[in-house]
Length: 524
Image 1 (cartoon, rainbow, N blue to C red):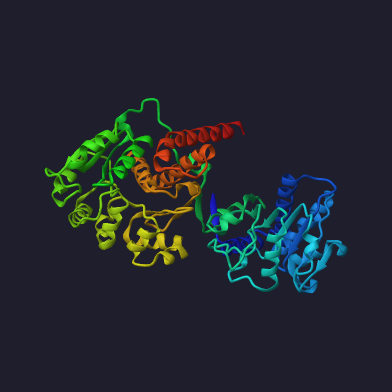
Image 2 (image 1 turned 90 degrees about the horizontal axis):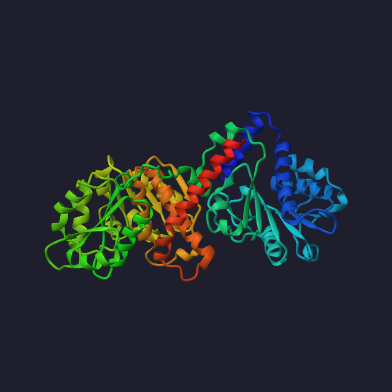
């Protein structure tokens, strides 16, 4: 699913009107109808139902006027509270305001204070205040209206985006409506899918308003990876598959106290379809890892009993990597100086696709320019915001303020693929292409989840997926496994090994969704 900013959507509207001769008033009619249909589906038809439309003076308010008219035609009571003088409404919005019975419109330019009784007992409140053009803090009568809508206690349907959410970033502009349903038009907006805005949208409905196909196809946007998208990327195994066709992953991981990270990365790669998995671990820890990883093979590194990987393991690791399809480096390796030196040395000589995570990233953050030596090879980084800040030489708040921009800039500068983890992980390619992951839940806020993701992404790379596809699939499958788990157990107390064990079910879900989509297409 393509996702765009509010600014891009405005350009799309102008193109539809100017180049394809779609009247603006017709686009507004279709938008209002999409919202009205969603309200009727959710709350039913007939008398005894009341929708209070709280409208601004712009096009978002114009959509609200259409909604009021269409609901009235279906037996609803649909009064409009207009936070402006009628003469302040212009253009297509004014045309639709004129189509309403004046007795159903109350102009309240002074705000909703004192009008609370009109919100009480509403079947639904329609938020048609601000729309996608807002990018500054909401104050005054509009801010007060948002507070009163939130306090009213009735279900809320927001038009296009909850008022007060920045359509380009998902940021809350001081305050924002908490919607139960948001009906957006033609394409979802970034603010609909990025947090915190995504958490205020409730159920998101994307209404088809007949935007010309060329306008949609040519609009600048990013990909939102949902189940349908991920299922389309996924390749089910063929009947003649064997362990050699599933790829062989080498996972370089582990140090004293962190054997769990190595085990979870290896086991997750196996659970994600890797044909073979080999763990390269400090020799002192090899007996432990052989217990923790039944299916994975192990290679003990170093003749001594040091509990961390040392620079002397370089030649053995290079030889091991040459016989494998992909290398994952970093889970639990620690930050001992000799280990950091080993990571730097490996970056210079490894030719295989490489996934870097955890302490591998911390080592790279000391010399990120080393990544430039790998521009001719596939490199995937999977940082959380703290690791991203260290890599980019900035603060965590700076990363979080512009997750897409930060991920894109680093990926393009260093020629890497990057998964910036977090709620709605951002996936960036070296050419600047961006995807946003749509799976996952708060239960994943526990230790070891990143080690699982490392194994999943490595497994997909080993199976021959394009790096950007491996990153999108890996991020989605990781979160989808957690979502399937949450359906049964909830999100409290979820562990990384729980998610690891749910990975085959997540893959089966993608395969089933793919089959269903194929059957539906054949039946059309």
